[in-house]
Length: 334
Image (cartoon, rainbow, N blue to C red):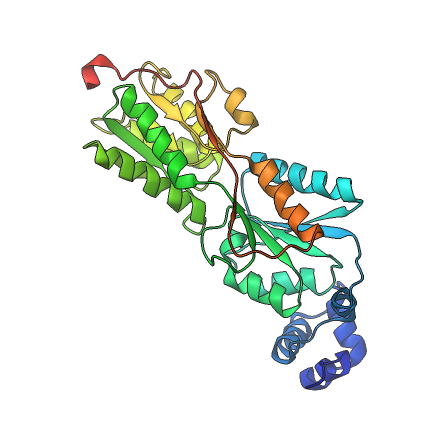
């Protein structure tokens, strides 16, 4: 079967070739009805634009993309540092794009980006790493991709990860060794696979010690950490130690504790995750898990540039970084 052409797309959509071109070039004077018709025809035919076909033939454009839908600026900056470093080493450029993975028009968002972007590969970051829709579109357009911090779809692409479950277990062991028995946990977005793994590792470790945790929902944003911190610390028997699934939310717990006149770590110990810039910007400095975000992103970009294929994930080491935000449990809580 011959490869679909732009003329085939135009015929199926019932529009002119020029109209198809306008949609693919993301021109501003395109109606939503026209855009939807053209994109539906592209998907039905499995149309691969000429730019992607040239890539299949072996030519390179020396551009690597990075796709984001993450509210944490610290995380985004570290990913960009890693991908940019790999690109600079090999004379590539970096293209940054964002999508809203929970939006109803995610498919249209992704196609708008990929049908006009000339890239040699795309680095997917959480939670885009778990989106089968995004992966399907990339594969349809024959654009290589690599994922960082992915949990689902093992073996589907190059994947660079760390052991989130083991890291969260180490947090629990650290707090247990300090005498804590009343715990709080602030989770991340449900679609963020690694957030769920961190939760599982932490809760399993404290359960093995005969303890349990009260939980609060978070979104990886600072403000959600404040709200979750208030919910946990306003309880009748508040936790003496709180583990937040990222540093931004842990910093929010600091604000909630301050509002309530509580001291860290005398009244409540706080632990984050990532070892981002905010971990050493708050006072006292935050105990956290060092996640090699920049190196994970760098390794993912390198794999795309080298056109690597592998089924087993690349696992990079993490580290528990103990600072002044954790201390022994208050005596009255022991």
